[in-house]
Image (tube, rainbow over all chains, first blue to last red):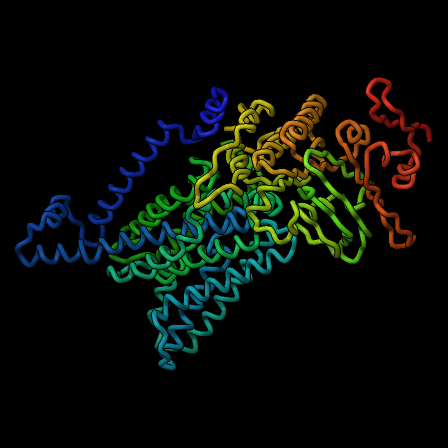
Length: 357
Length: 266
């Protein structure tokens, strides 16, 4: 009995997140979340004071000027904050899932061409709906989902047909898919002429002018993807040990890759449908989080969700304040921040993975 | 009670090359089997086949009376544990997270089943406690091997298939592992199939031996694999036929286990 107790105590000790560290991280996370949302509300082309915000939330509004303030805060800035938080969270989780199923630290919706596939699908469906007046429900979102799923399944098929997938060939396949989708995208946009003009700004990645209704695609795709990956952290751990080791504990790697890959592409599609192509969130955030909580998916997934949202929230804040009143495309900001991380992973190669946490 | 594993009329192919022409093999509970043979004879293919990862070209395999391929994955993993030859690629997991995946077959609705009492001592047997918080990638080869073996033991399977489990272990750990495997076979009625290269180790550890020949297409001679007790299979003539090496087989003066000696003069 004492031995059992000893084993259990030893076994269930959370190694990286010892209580004090976990507590610090959670309180840090809560503090930074609150302050991020607050500064997201305050900052922008029109700055508000904290007093204004408090007044709005206490419903102490009388004059028409206050009414406008209230409208800006509640119907312009707040939905935008929720939207970028959701998109960042979803992209970052999608990156973690793709890294697990491709057994490759460089996998991410953007680098695999899944985001490109989603954008192509969305634009193509919009084009069909506008030009031929086909009745396609939620053309943008459904097109994005179909495009991203096709792109991801193509990647799975081509990468795992060869027995060994390695770091560089995966990225080559991704480059191929991205280049092809972007060429097709240009083709569709050229043919569509003026009907899809607004798609151009959307493709660069922007969260401007969003209402609460725009939360639906990303929220819905996130909720739909949940049953495919929640509770499978240990399964993903087993999968990252390699196919033989996963099979030995009763997991069909190819089947699991299909389900989890579907979930990941669903989330990527929701994100693309919401704000366009935003790259490198799924690369940058998971690798930063891994340095703190380790590689086990049970801890990695929730933290990646949380901090992915915060990361994109701050990126969006940067995008709309640095050159205010003009806005930078969101994808530009994340690429500027994310590509150095990509460079470091490529350069340090295996040693990046070998570090003792 | 049906035998734990029954291999009947099995033929193994790799690409277009036939590795094993015809194999009949029965594993009872509590038996330790060694799989021996020259490089390229198909040892790994054979154990991948009996672990369910590969399909035989023909013939059938029964696990506990039921066809192996008919098992649901989780149930199969509760009965058969398999440790491949190469340790996994770098993945950043801790040792504890690697070990936890060994309990995956027993997970129901996201909840792990309790560890069986017989395995409580595992951490002590394999000296895992100091390793648990460390990153799996940072371990030495022998430590990785111990962790992977522990993961297989945690599966609590009736049949454990180990591909060269002693390869990276130091001499003392090899002895400890031999003792542990024998203990689990005798006291817990676990069966083991172990791929080995060391004949003396096989004679020390195993009850039975499967000796696979190197089949070459050019010569077009088919040697059937030998299956049987250690003393029946590991004879001077068989070893010459299979390895093309003249070996002296001597019984140990005290315990009668076989020892192998060959002259190193060319």
